[in-house]
Length: 140
Image 1 (cartoon, rainbow, N blue to C red):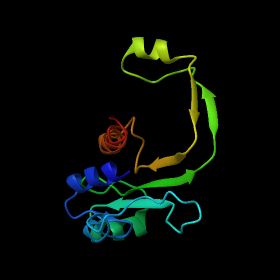
Image 2: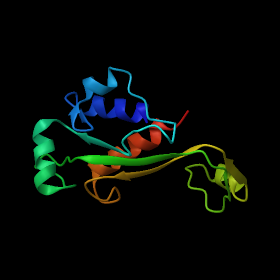
Image 3: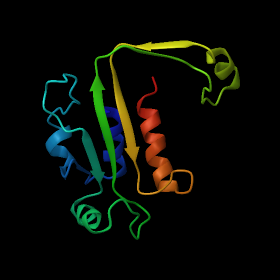
Image 4: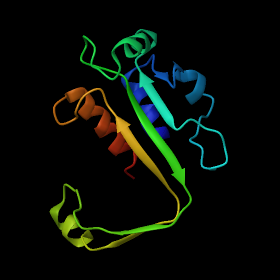
């Protein structure tokens, strides 16, 4: 999540993160909480600055005249064991998808995350870029 937040700061140098200038949080070493008893926001908000924050209040998740808009990440940390059998694997490499199908995946700690963009990423380039940034942040 830290890499994703930093990528958005590259997108918008005057980034507002959780309703305030990003420098206040990101430069101070912000980290997502990993203790379920710890108080932390379960929503991270992103906008280009104070004017977009005002736009958001009036229009919600929508694209502005520049074709950009505010977006959010809703997340929660879980310390529970879950397992799943992979059936349909979304990958650019068909060979990897075939070899991964049928694999058992077990997680002992994980985040549940929902990304809310101003438009459908399938139909909107800006929203698709945000989703691509999110995916890239979790590679490597």
